[in-house]
Length: 427
Image (cartoon, rainbow, N blue to C red; front, side, top):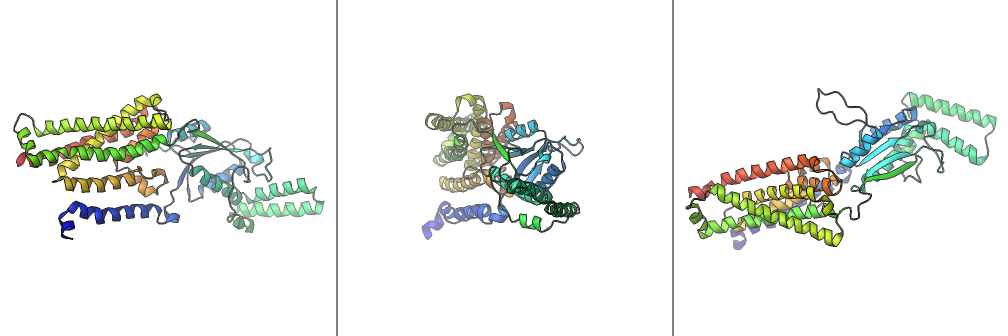
């Protein structure tokens, strides 16, 4: 116990780190019903019929979906953007604005629901991003549910037509009873009163395009031609986490120099603390970048990662990430007094940042609050940038948000590190 009390680093790792990790993962997985993230879906209604409007309203009422029918306005004073078109929706999915887009085609209202896979039914297009395998399944199920709950009269009418087709026809008296029932059901629907058929449909399960009452054709617009779709994600996620460990360990040389007296001798020359820290920052940036290159080259050689076709974007993101990580390591080394403190503090911070920032678990599967918290980490911005390069095949100019944040973080952390390092000059 005495030895543990003397080693503050070991004490922190023994108690604080497990509690921190428990809290993070309990927040993500502890309450599945409350923490399941809402799925963003872009909705395009090309039909503009009564049936399609009912379906759109039904999807909007689903609490598990965030339905977007138009791009977000740039500012309050800017005019409201026009509704999404099919081309705009596909481009938005490719850009990562939403993992799924639904396009209701023209003619959908003429035959919206069919039982038994009627080929004359108009199929809704589902465009998806293959990096998120869960979102299309959720949207598919909720689409079938919305079709049953929002169009009860259409369901009843199509069901009777299908029954008549396969049974062999109804008598005039039976047809009159059916028409009267449909008229009453449409009246109740217009008045906003869902009858027993609607309430029973809420309990119905959802199926895929072949088993559902609404025909859906799925098409992957991102990742369909990728040989190793998730290799780039894991290379970036794991790479950034270990870059931070490398940078903090390399920056710890500053503490060794201070303990041995080398730092005092260096500062007694014309080398200032700013120049010394800047030199170490350049070295640590180069070291981190080389380590990142090795990680992606290994992914190219062993796991068939498409590396060389994305070389410009990799260089830009790699250098910016390495710079931010190196500055982070310099700040940790400047703030700590000993190597033991640096080891404990760096392990605690890096593992927490990696778990929240997406290096251990994809951020798009986290609750919305955790996704926002992840934006406070270097990991999240770096992974988002590499995803744009290797997964979405976006040009370098589209990396400006990630590049701006990483460079700003690097400059800010280095400025704080220089401020903290004044204690060695004063000593």
